[in-house]
Length: 593
Image (cartoon, rainbow, N blue to C red; front, top):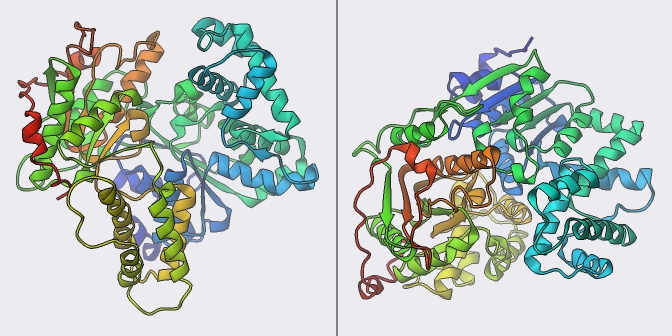
């Protein structure tokens, strides 16, 4: 039985903004709860209001609630929303950060001395392991071996299972199966000799400690009584095992996910835990969120057509109005080009025209299947005078000007001031060269201004009454978790890195066989994963969506459109010829207006 608090003094402010289904999820405070939440259906709103409602009603002790997700950015977003809702004391972390905190706390007690250091990345140690194993290896192959190690650990399988996987899928690069296994064993031996652990070991070591030490298990389970797991379709066997150890047989867990957005199966994620939740918990409360608040009805219709008949797929309905109140949202289209360069240049031209018409550059994205596609789009957008940033390139808080600004703001915030927050922040940023108006033209000066301006714009997102000191602390927290603010530039991103984000306008180029689905997608399961990738890309768009493909790329003159396009039944307009380079160059420097 689910306990529902009905005190209107508590319910009104926290639940009034939710729709009926979201409210059911928010009021289901106890027992196993499964929220099947389609793209754009307000799942984060539902779960944060659920947590805040539990805290406000007295059902939850905020210090004993753990909200779990999969990226530092997502965890930071949860913390920010919970703080606004009055539940800032609730822990919102990734699985790895929660496990690492427990490992560092209990290791000295159980084993004596500090916990082993965690490797930043596997590459250097793998290189040394290759020398020890007498294996020659290049950088791409090294990355593939690292991925095989990660898959084995998060999947909770041994070397024999890895041998089977390598035998069926092929070993990395020019390595044989046995060479790969030798390299893996040499890596593990080196790691142990150096008293180090990798990212995946953190999960395994924490789970092992809880299993082996009853006192540790008791303390962990006493510390956290209620769990919320976001993006549950991405959970791996190792994470699921750790979650079960944290729960210790209790059922106070709420999971949230969408099987149609499972795009990390190659890394060990399994939607089976989400789809099988009701079988594992027959008394679970199951809520379906299918009302999409993000996308136009036309975009929602395209998404539904792509996933029609797929296991676990939710049928979305569009809650967003058709258009912005003054004109209807344009229907999605598919465009065909003679070659990739023509495709990239026309995408850039259309984006340039949208920016000139008043669209903010940061409201537009170009989403690609693989990183190698980005170069031609960076070039085409640059020719068109459009500011662009490649997501996954240098992190925002790693930029020198951003580090300088964060340090300066934290130093200035030590002084007591009654000035408005906007003035305090602006004064610091002006001392670093920022101004209200952007510099003319693209280049390094404009890039620096964009970075500082992104920090300035964070002031607008702060709750009323935020002090300079609190803002500085929030900025430090963002920097530590790499929770990046929006920058006034078009985003170029892979479909994988776009998950969890949204834009007013999305371009999905390169939709050909061999790219989406990717050439190495072998078998029905791999093809379904590619389908889900396209679904993620489509559902990132709010009002405008354009898909495209090119008939040739270099020497490959006969390419076929993606099989998925044939299922969508979208009109194909005549693709306009790209503007001459001279015409585009004359318009440079007007980006971001």
